[in-house]
Length: 114
Image (cartoon, rainbow, N blue to C red; front, side, top):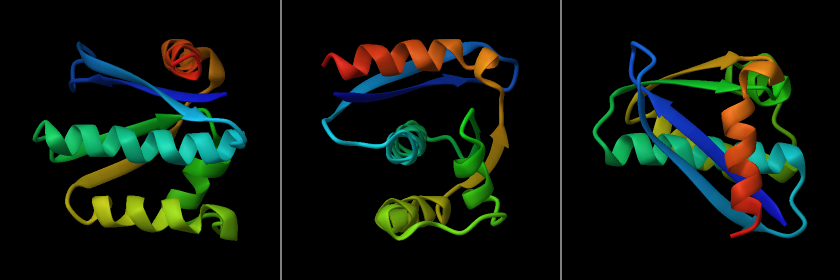
């Protein structure tokens, strides 16, 4: 079972909310990352945020959204959905190392059990 999660913090690093979702079986790591990015942006939109920074330890996903890598056909649907959301807010994508992503990884584990 695949799970994704994320943490929202304000510009000072203060915790605002988090999420953890179960995505079901048979998803690749990159597919889960695309879906978690989508869900994170959607939640930020619902809460009225207009400027978002997505940090991910998936260098591939960051490169895709920074137009430094092509989107594989299998993820084009998620890319299209995310690009539509990006048209509503300002989103910057930044790579973070796995060591800096512990809380999100823990939330993804929780999501995989839901």
